[in-house]
Length: 186
Image (tube, rainbow, N blue to C red):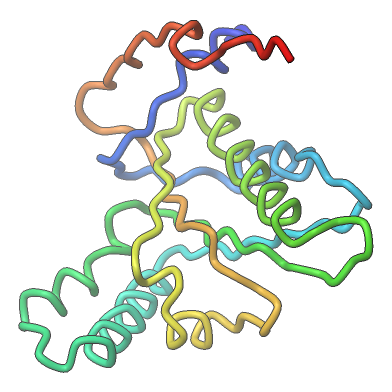
């Protein structure tokens, strides 16, 4: 795949099945992610992979967090929380690791971690994998953060679902740069 084509044609794919990305594919995805812009070379990111039976354990963690946040949660809501990690054979939890630094503010570190996650999505597309980045309330839930072993200086910036696309691949909506770019004239 030509680099430009990959950059302008990547789309999220929500319907993902087996096979999961291979270990070699995941290695290539992470190698791309690690090339994100990184002022100060802080490496303000880390990733957790969740595969196999660990997806069910993550679903249980999601259900516990849902019940704690919403004591009146219905059985259907808890079942939905349990099923979330089962939507793809591999999940990657993208985590921003924020450092106190005199020249690199927290927002820049968050953006760098976001760029790393985006690089992973781009690489997945190049590999022919399906991928979608999801967040939602569980990404900032203290029980989920604790259950995943996050430190006080870390934040979940997304759950990236990876697998083989099922169904028809959607086409990207054409966008005109002129609708988003203007010249500042001073």
